[in-house]
Length: 311
Image 1 (cartoon, rainbow, N blue to C red):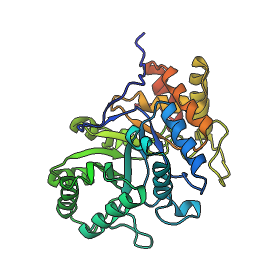
Image 2 (cartoon, rainbow, N blue to C red):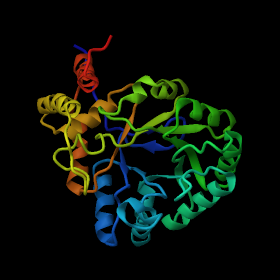
Image 3 (cartoon, rainbow, N blue to C red):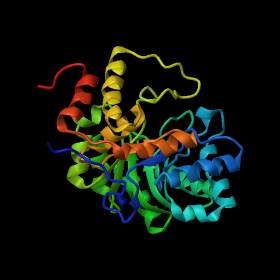
């Protein structure tokens, strides 16, 4: 019986020249003042074979820190250990303004990118993503500024996050640099991209897909819920975890690794963004490569999540 196997080999991100790992490390919870501890987390991700790091300028307030705090902390790590920057494909996001909430006007885009570069202490972002769509910005105006930032060498590639296929297509029409990536929420508990055209459009146009919250906002973790959150388990979550646990048990891995593997088995080559800040959990992310899937097993997880058989 044919099985879907996973490879840890790096590959190009969409149609760009960026060579990235099949998993990324997310820095939403990258916080604190201990630079050495922060560096240890960065090095744990690199040791796990992850060279693709995803941050954003808005990361900070959710951790009771200032806007830009996560980028600033990573900038301090780079300042202490400059050699780390060259080992990383660095992605960030912008376009969310406190109290606005969204702004993709040309002036704000330039200001946001340049502020991120300053906080990070780098000359270029390998990937810069519009964090959420600004419905009051015409995609032609947005694209013109992004193309200018690419021409100036401040950004290597452009992506979008939380955009519909239509919004992505509208930007792509005007963007000479092309849309390299899209970042939806996707997990065995957040399956909309399978059905709303997001993954189909990505495969049609050679766009890379990054999956945020691949563990269903912590509900599919191995007993490691997000800090400060009580984890209530409804029937759907229980069914999905049971299906993932059974698959993981076949290969001696946990639920989280099985969830990452389920995401990566899709032919769109989806890159799950590992969000844990625990070095041990980061190391365990490599267990995902041990898992194989038959079609029946993969669809079994989907059916468990949907709570009904597919037509």
